[in-house]
Length: 276
Picture 1 (cartoon, one colour):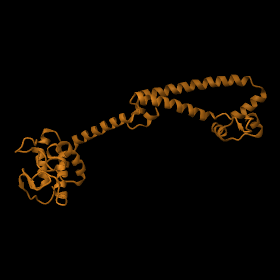
Picture 2 (tube, helix red, strand yellow):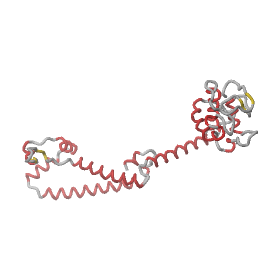
Picture 3 (cartoon, one colour):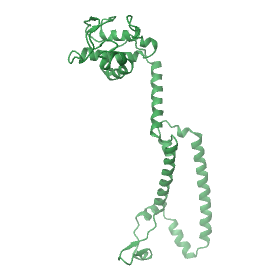
Picture 4 (tube, helix red, strand yellow):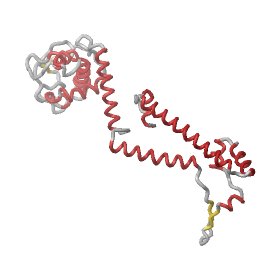
């Protein structure tokens, strides 16, 4: 109950089972309270007048004051004699105080809670971190898909370079492009994308040219498929991949040329300044 009440998006308070459980708990508490009153009245009728006066005085003490007294009240010397234990053989004496009821209640509640929690954790998905991660991942992916439906689509005209896209573009490149173009786009089956030589030049800027290739594929080589038109990646993904390739070709390679790259292919291209 405690976990479900505070878990994110659990919908616990809107569940009819929760409110049904609360109703049953309240009814049981009322029944227990009524039975307790009957027993208390029966026991009270058997007390002497002196015991009744002492009982009523104790009854008038506020509940939280009783809790405080049970936890922190110090016994008088007379009271201590009645609960004193003498070990005898070692000369050590100790008070045989009863534990406060609130402490005992918390102890048994903790034991029961641990037993239920461990059973649920071991044999069900209740409160299980992997199940929570799976649920949160599905929720996140669903929200991304919903965002993609309403967000403006990225095309060749609207695509823009953003350095914040480089890290994600690198991961997308590994998934969709590295099989042919090699790790770090140094070339493999496909050409090296870190040098200044290009086989297909369709746009004046490198960033737009990469996006064009991802959208339309290579007219010279069917292996380079139109990934956007096929639905393998979205325009937003292509924008990120283009940002990564622009970064390693125009911002990294001129400073630190890629080592071990494939031989240049195509014609040398001098791209227009700018990355849009």
